[in-house]
Length: 253
Image: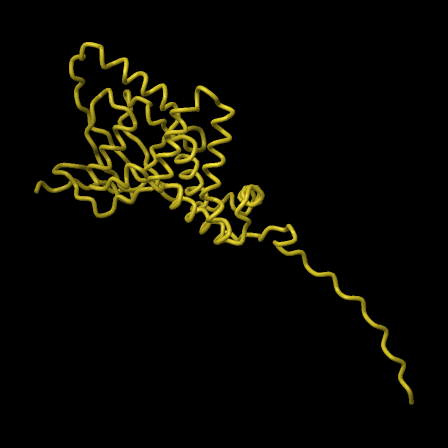
């Protein structure tokens, strides 16, 4: 018995690859890992100083050029970090990343949202209005020094996983700015890194809103803090520390 040769099967269409233009699809864990790498790189002192200089030189004088230069500066980090996570180190890779960061499965991921809020702060909020603040500082030099403002205690609370945690108190002048409060926290914790990474926020509606560095403390005596772990910080004599809803008074040393 003879057998007719089998008809040759047409080649199967290849699955599109990243090289062909389709970006790698990130899982929730991969999206969080990418954010962590970006946060570490964006927190670099040299990167932040250049960003600060851009705000001072261009934010008010030439907003269009400022946004273009800022985007180029962002890409110096993104072009290095994105390829480590399977995305193009280019403007297209950034576009693909932002599209995926808007996927519904990430909305309920608290770590992703926390990192996203921290990134938003250090890239877009931290240096806002620097030119105006420096002009105010320069004009105040010629003024007669006012009567010293009294010192006040501010209650700072960790905010992680959607809940308030440990609390620390810092002492600042009544006319302090939020930058002064963050500096006081860094000094209290003995770490200049805290000054760069701590994000001061307040509740508004159903979410959190960042304070600008130049915003005055005013009558506010409680501030939420993102991005800093208060664990292990020595308590001052008589200071109240609340953990898991319980208040304990620190013993005098």
